[in-house]
Amino acid sequence: MSLRNYETTFIVTPTLSDEEVKSVVEKFKKILTDNGSEILLVDNWGLKKLAYSIEGKNSGFYTVIEFKSEPTFIKTLDTEFRRDERIMRQIIIALDKHAIVYNEKKRNKSFQPTQS
Image (cartoon, rainbow, N blue to C red; front, side):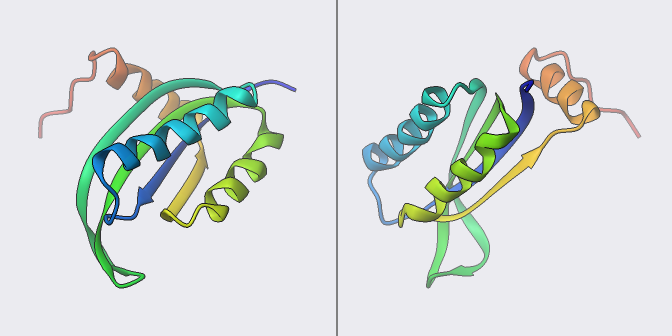
């Protein structure tokens, strides 16, 4: 099987300290690398207000990780997110060729938004 490009965004509960949030992110980076995934980007957005309350909380720490992985591993990753009570929400998406090119340009700082 070949590696596919994915992006996961997850929200960590706001009740944790900065160090605890970092340890959650490190845990999931380790899960990815231990299972043969290649991490392309880790983008910590920090504490953001939620669009709607989740578990009585109005904010959370957002993190985006772009990675390459075997498609068979995604279900395992999703299970790991669901088992961790510090994760309020998560999504894992497979990137199409246009999203891959867009993300590469963004990472390489060669992205130029179109002027309207």
